[in-house]
Length: 483
Image 1 (spheres, helix red, strand yellow):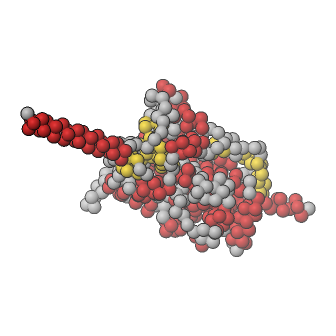
Image 2 (image 1 turned 90 degrees about the vertical axis):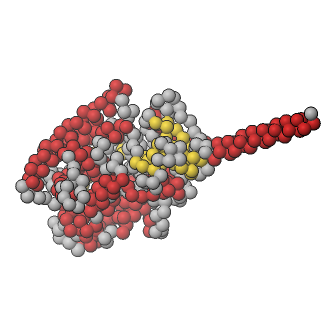
């Protein structure tokens, strides 16, 4: 009996030890694999309505600010139909963006997927994305801009500013400029009635980007889908006509011709592209080149208007450039490279306005970050705006101060064009367009606000009233002062 009792006692002890061990291991595992804290809100809708209402205030980051204060720099929410992890830490964001294709992959809300198209650059992955990203960069690098695009940028900016008089809506005028520039680069089409009609339809597509992607719930989304179909039909006609010309040996120096050449299916292992695939690709490039750049132009002028010393400094820089050239002479690459303060203004506008507030990714495996585990399949939002407006990253972060860029060359926490393999391929082209626009604006005009306007931050950063201003030709103002 003593032997049996001893054996039973040993067995019970081992069972208890084993149970405690596995319970402890499971607890450690749970601690190691706990998801980021947060609140997922209501079923299906989540916190989407709270996010939308928050961004309609004048505070640029109320939704994120309140949750960072409660949960920290990495937190969980539920927006646009999906549980989403928000990241507001620069180091974490760099890690996520640089691990594209390994730990994370591009993933955007269903509303954007449906409106841009499944064959757009946003949703391409793997070798196809690398090839098409490289092709896009090849048509927007400094050499191409210098030798080919700068003359068109200068001409189209001048053409649009020639019609300015009295009261204008700056955002509308800027959108005309950037849409015409983008169509010229993509399709070699000059401004005409067709381009203006297409632009007006395309504006409705943009409005549907950040809606719940269910047409019965959103009239804006329904209109956006209808507009998208019209844009696709218009572009399809152009693509078909240009493909016929290309097959007959008639080629142009633009992105569409490069797509035909790249997708020719030759011996280099190229991809063959259908007309529908090309249309999706063109729509995504219109998104990248149109709305963001035009809004940055508008906000640069607004911030400058509120900072008279910056306007004076900018005029001095550009008057010096113009004094060396005839009034009708186009800007050259050397002129662009001699605009240091202009680049400070552009940097600061990009930092404060954050036209692209962040980018979406999806975890392709469990990823450990900041003591938490982002589960495989989770949607992730890297907030660029939260980084740019954090006092820990920039002194007086919510104040427009272009001179800050004269004091530092450290751009570690500055990511207005994203990062990693998906960094915006047109970033240099956007800078040149902004620089040329500011040059002609400050050398030809003085301006003042026509009425008070304010920033709104949803669905994208913009001014509420499209920033109405009153413009006057500087030559006329100078004459009046002399008289």
